[in-house]
Amino acid sequence: MLSLGVRQLDEVLGGGVEEGSSIAFVGSIEYDNIILMHQAVMEALKAGKKVLIVDFRQPPPTLLKELKNHGIDYRPFLNDSLTILDGYSNLYGQTVQSGENILPNPLDLGITTAIIKEKLQKGNYDILVIDDLTSQYTLQSNPKSYIKAIVRLTNSVKSLGKFTFVALYADVFDKSSLATILIPFDYVIEVSREVVEIKRSPKPLRVIEPRFSYIRTNRGIRLKKELYQSLEGLKAQLQAGKNGTIWIKDLKTHRIQIREEETERSLIETVYDFLEFEKGKELLYVWGKKQFIGYGEYSKRHSTDIKEALEDLFKFTMASGGGKLELVELSDSVVIIRGIDLFPSGRGYPYPLHPNYAGALAQFLTEFTGEHWEGEETKCEAMGAEHCEFVLRKVK
Image 1 (cartoon, rainbow, N blue to C red):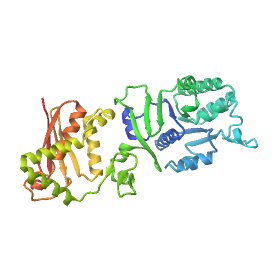
Image 2: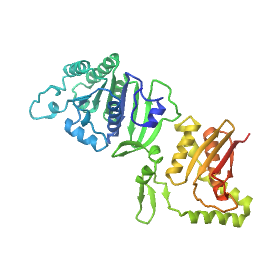
Image 3: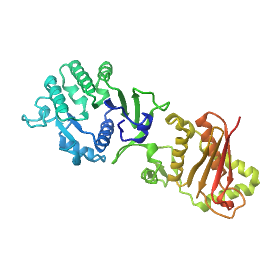
Image 4: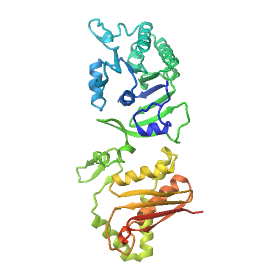
């Protein structure tokens, strides 16, 4: 299996893409599909693969400069495991260019595809990359002949047991041409308008909804879910508003407030003071459930493994300052979770300070499994225990 360089996509695909596959990265005007494709190429180079890139979109030096802005630096691999064929200069240059890695007449499809196949075999490359199919398509007097040539080239590369990566801008192709040019591709991955979606895979996918929100960064295409699982990623997304508010940049409904532990603890203590223990704990528990409405449903669309889903939730909790959660026991009817340094922390209080965590975890499990769960904080650091503990049980 070959990694695409994005952990969550690899997991959904069962570890990556299969050897000798053809992958089409379909995008729109922002060209984020091209960035993701080159991220996958970079991952392949790091894994020891030998790569031939055919560049029709811009001069190779410009391509290298553009990709470096997104954390993709091909220079250490050039003339060793990476070769770039220049298919641009003789399309648009004022004079005819010549050289070992310059295509003499890119518009002559017969000669061009013959040169590519010969170079691929003689150089013993593992992967053919075409950046991109759209620029050539727009220049063809007979687009149908071009599509047939691409289909033949892709299938011939596949017959050699080698990978083919291509990028294309879907909006330029009419509906039938787009469907035809995608015929030989085993995987079709659409990267457009801040969503990555796996549209085709030769194997069943591990999730119900293979769609993931992303942002473009100086480290390439990053899935939002992964960004919010680290403190650095979360901090990078915070943005101060002019009116004194703080927002997560790409989630317009998520407003953030920095809270002191003393203030949070005072709020919880006030709930207990006014409602007394049992009713106060019940209110805090329901508060936690309400805060987590929708989280389990979202996770269920992107993961089928409950352990994996809980561990992702724990990463988000730690990154957002909630403390450390660890899975102690997992069965069909009981889940036990340990908490360390949960927010708010403190010692010397007679009641548990984190019933809202128990409610949130119960809500998450209920949505993820489709069965009813209830939970309780059975140990709390505030009451003198070494750690907090949450016991969640399935309710029949």
